[in-house]
Image (cartoon, rainbow, N blue to C red; front, side):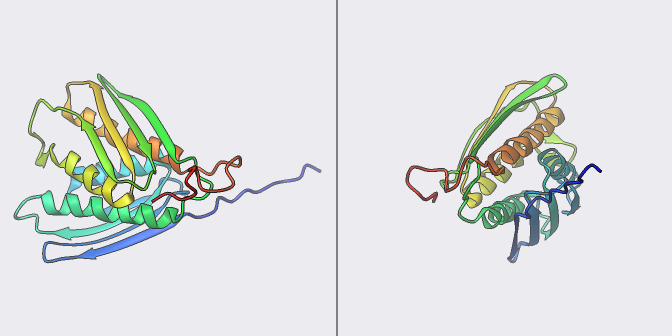
Length: 205
C-alpha cells in the first residue's frame, strides 16, 4: 500500500490594528496561506489590487477599514499600508530561516514591471513609475506610491518598484501589486539550507 504523506505549512500570521480620528483599520495576514482574502476597505479599486497581491503571493489576507473618504482616499490608503506593513513585520518576527530576498519581472498586457524586496529591517522605497493619467476611475494613481512607502517603512523592508514600460495605468498598477505579491512570497519562504537569521550580522533590524 502506498503511504500517504500530508505536509502542512506552518502558519506565519501577523495582525495589526490602528485607530485615529481619520481612520479605523484592522489587518490580518498569513504568509503561508492559499490566497484567500476578505477585503472591506470601501475603496473598490484598492480591494481589487489587494486581492491580486493576496492571490499571487498566496497570502491569506483580511482587511477591514473605515476612513474619511469624504475628504479623499489618501489617509485610508496610507494607513492600510501602515497596518499591512506592521502585520507583515509581526508575522516574520526575527526572520529566522527565510530567504530574505525576492524579485520578479511581471507582464500585464503591454506593461512590464520589476519588483525587488529585501527584508532588511531598513524600511525604504525606491519607486520609479510614471503614469500618463491622474486617476483610474476615482482612484488617484499617486496613492500607489504612498501605499507602498508606508508599507515598506513599517514592514522594515527595502522595496524597489520599477516600471520598465507600459501605457495603461490600470495594467501598470495591477502588475505592481501582482509582482509585489510574488516577490514577497519568495522573500518570506523558508529555506532548509538556512538555519539561522539570513545576515552576517546575526540580526536583521
